[in-house]
Image (tube, rainbow, N blue to C red):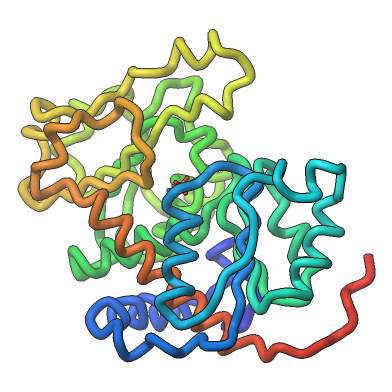
Length: 315
Ligand code: CP
């Protein structure tokens, strides 16, 4: 990789991304070949926000590659609770590890961490901004399940304002030719204008629709998202938005036979459990692809970063 850190997937060239996707597929098919490739390496996971999939798939990925893991998933159990700054934490932990994976509630935190780290930093989600390794997961899922990342009509449904997974996905899939988007949200939870500008600048087609029913027949991929309670400033505002979009069997019937339904998870009530049995629902498979995606990423980033004991970057 030409870039030492992974803050935003757009910093990777399409060729680098393609290599990563191929590597993830190879790891999935022949996992034993990579079992000791990270022997002696340490990954630190600093999770300032809750996570199941991202944290555990990174940890499982490193363990399956023969490496080891350190870190915290509750900042209150670390010296963050005593008031230690992000900068100091990162400077210290990057001296203990070979790669650092961080989730933080503030947009831009991963970028800030990269300025103080001696080792590569991976953005595992920064507030409502971006979630590049989820997008990597989504790309591996689509590549392995449909064999293509081009000429897809992709529906994004739910909290498109705060949904960092959707922001990363739109940015990345806009880079592949022939893709278009159907954006399904309430006016209050529409995508930020900078993403519309991003698509306009690239000539990417998108339509905004108020209901799932109207969108279903058009879609090759439906990317459902949760209404994120934690991103609302008041409980009242959240109550007004929750439960507006629910994918159930009745709506799924309007979809193409070749439709693929993805969701970064966790879900609350936006997909009914009966949908889980439909072969078009691949969100649980997606979680496993996430581990292979992260194995490929760790391998690539560690290969591209020769560990040297350089002085800590000065602020
Ligand atoms: N998709 C995702 O980021 O899930 P977690 O919050 O469980 O990591």
